[in-house]
Image 1 (tube, helix red, strand yellow):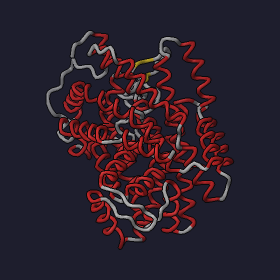
Image 2 (cartoon, rainbow, N blue to C red; image 1 turned 180 degrees about the horizontal axis):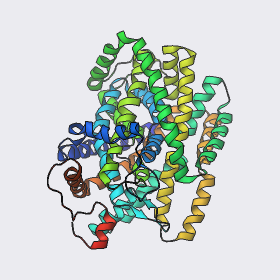
Image 3 (cartoon, rainbow, N blue to C red; image 1 turned 180 degrees about the vertical axis):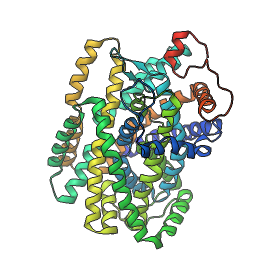
Image 4 (cartoon, rainbow, N blue to C red; image 1 turned 45 degrees about the vertical axis):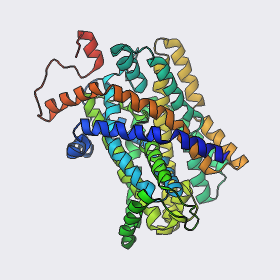
Length: 485
């Protein structure tokens, strides 16, 4: 089974998908004139700056404030991928995989900006007047209505099926159970059951309730985890430069076998680094734009800035901290993988207390990730049953009841059958590949609309160019007045 899964991931995350992601990222980066780099300060001012000032949302329509939306999205992306995923990348691809995670995240900042912008631009209102959007929505409206592409529905169905496959193969419960069970010597199935119960308590309030919970938990858990990691890095300051040298050198030459590490070729380093980056920050995957689409905002690009911020925090901050701790402490070549490797690295850095810190981080990250993904599935279901309100409400009720069961059953199966943790991560890579490929191709096709919105934003808020007062930032407003912009 393990060899089959590894081969399947190697094919799905092969050269075609890697080239597509890099090409789309570079296309938007160059087309926007390096927006994420040139206007990095502006992005931070409009996101982190507002967060520090405690500013609320802009605009009247939406379920969540921009901060609640990004907290839910960060909760969905800053999770087990940052702790177990990064560790797996280093364990399989060596330290060089970290370099390709960085590169993918830098262009991913703009890919996520594009996804979020299009999701907000093409969003629709339900029967209660609440806005929802995402890749399936911009496929329907951007490809179907605007471009007359009749194949948008099968494309959206394949995309949705790919996202929903993670409903059955989910890593959150497994990683939490592995970390907590291993640290405190508790049976993984018992931990999984407690996690199951807490997840149900968290999702009772639906998307608005999750937004409030994420708004409280996410800043705390990120700060808690990052400060602990920085302490270990500074404690081993003499190893910082050698760690970076190893990362850069291994990125292009691969890594020879050392200790419990079996070695990795340069191609494997590249593939693993990009795959883990996408799974961690979800840039290109098409997931977090769904929750961003519910935010209160008066311009799509404004919420797109939060998407860029999300990727930066996720990979360039949290993932980097995890990776540096693993490399600096020398545990990367121990033969361990997943959350166990990160737990061991932190324990090596600051003793058993470090292991406890990571365990708490995994637990909180896992809960918020489960909350974020609950939102994604709900939005997909709302779009699928949008015209049949009665059926939609029934399906959403059943969905809320069964949502957490697959993760629990996966843990039970893994424990009883001795399933290796790497197999679980291979399943995760398989489920992310197909939706990512479809989504990045779709946003590439819809790039003219994004560049129009970016041009309008620059004119209105950056004083670059002439403001066109007749331009409508939202698709539904354009339809109402029959504009052909």
